[in-house]
Length: 342
Image (cartoon, rainbow, N blue to C red):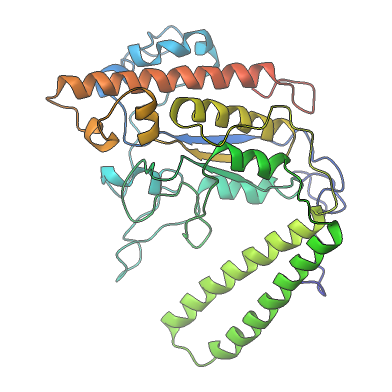
């Protein structure tokens, strides 16, 4: 809050800053990106032979576009969700590995996602502790009770930016509102939160255990908003970095959308705007951009359908092609420490 200060000890793993945005965060801190394509892949053409281990393994057909980067990535196979074999909930538990039935009486449960754990550890010195990208609206790449990759410590989904235009403006766009007005707007939001929290705390003493748990989750959500507002206010006078790429068109979808999102992800890391990104790629518009009219879910059920399997193989190869482009971008982009982002 505005009237409370908590001094932390000097921690070697944290950047030496005197406040949000006061100095560039340490270049030695890691950077991390999580990608999810959803709806699975083509078993017959994606996985290498599990017995063919070591650096000389043969790339399967779907990964051939990544051949020039082969020495720079590892493939880990035969990992499974220990609590669930629900194939339609891939995005929901991809970064949490949570037990959906961990709490008796609840039909669904999730925990904090690994990107948010990383954001808590590394994100204080960046304008954005983490960034979350989503495919274009209507591009669900999975089923289940939640379609987000990112979840807070109470297992609640966190929204993402749904197109390159929004991402670009979040990173590099400048508000036309004067700084003083922006600060005042943030303070007003904070004042409203103060009143809400005061009222909620009065109510808490009258509640049963289950309702107190719900209210505590609510408090946590409010605290997260308070932290975001505090960070926003601290950065409000700091100019955004010069964009290393041009402003995108709003109408991009599918293949070109993903390619540009990868470029924006590299730009976000390059400018130290964030260190942690989670990107749930679009599915339906991606197939449309490949001149495919079959829905992604139907493509994933390709067994016994030659046409669907052919489409599935094409989709996989195109994803590898895009990932190869992303590797190229990361390798050709210098980080703040002079080394490549890759």
